[in-house]
Amino acid sequence: MFNDELDMLQKWEQLAYDWIFFGKIRLSDIPQELRKYNSVLHSSALRYARERNLANRYVEELNVLLEDAVILEKQDKYASEDLYRLLFNSMYFGENYFKGEKSFDEFIQKQKDNPSLNWESGGI
Image 1 (spheres, rainbow, N blue to C red):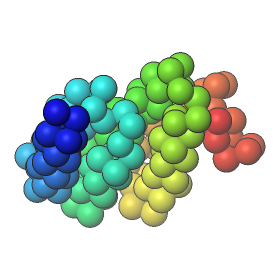
Image 2: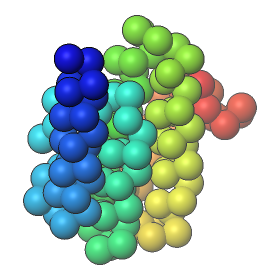
Image 3: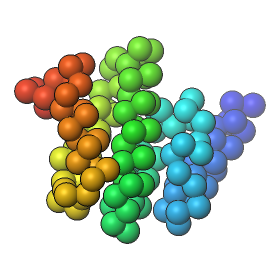
Image 4: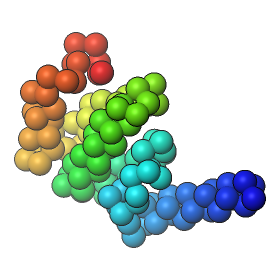
């Protein structure tokens, strides 16, 4: 039974990657319980938006990533570190693509003003 469930989950994940890659779904379309431990789904969604120069979508996916990291931190601080690392890297890397875009700049400023994020050490 466990192998059948694992096989089904792996097939679902592959479908989700494909759907994200082709812009059919967004992270918010995937239940949080399924996406919060999967940084590759987050990376795929951010990559899709970045490669198509979709600043608003990039910010939407960053917001989902942040939400997932905060929720996961309450449940499993160690596991949340991957999501926070991805968040900081995506914010930094996103500046090469979206600096000057209002939605992106506002998101970055809001996070810089967030006292729970430790910018001096590069993250939480």
